[in-house]
Length: 301
Image (cartoon, rainbow, N blue to C red; front, side, top):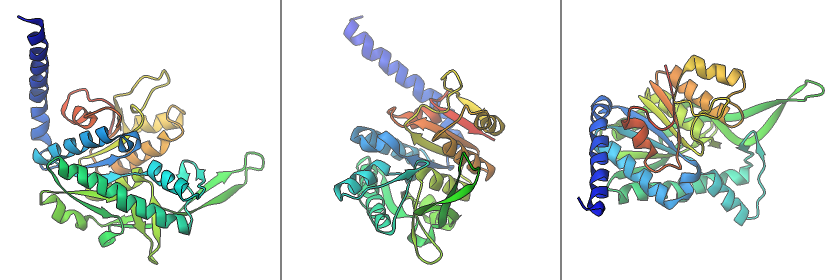
């Protein structure tokens, strides 16, 4: 056979094998709800955003109910820079003043949210963008962090401004979405008891929504391959107990700690599995969901 024809044939056979491998997972997850956090580098790459949108539409077409929660840190930073507003970070969280929270809301609920909605609809889906303030979806309170002085051992409270954490998620908002063809795309903004607007970390918001919905899966797209062991090798599967041990012994550190803690919170509220994926890999969602070995780290109950 001609070598030029042999290669396309091999690719077709590989594709057919992948589709065949996916069939039992398609059957298993039909009708289930997946909460998917979209963020990191992928959001700034139009080709990865387009690929993500196509994958979300595919999930909906085969009977899975995807709920998308998105971040937007780099885009917020770019807007603040354009407006010549300096921002400060503490433990990876942007200190958000009253003036800044208006800009955060504008960027998250406006340009970013509508871009993702547009891409999903270009890919053949029906998407609706909402924020955590709409319909009382996410009630929030001010997030406070404490830091211990290394010399005196005295703890002090850090004021992060209008950075919040979810106190309650109203799952009834999703009733109409999950019984229809509409894919919800959620900006992580919450409302305080006095009507204040709070900027919520997208990982935290996704975990809270997954817990409220008793979702089958929480999938968080990030800029890392997943959880790595002390030798830097990817850990493909972990129990909750094993994940907690990795935090305790320092294997999981820095910015990965809150991501793993978000996964654990979701699992404690009957989510069956939580995944930390490398969003820089095209179609990583499909590889993780529909293949035996996946492409990232899964934590399970």
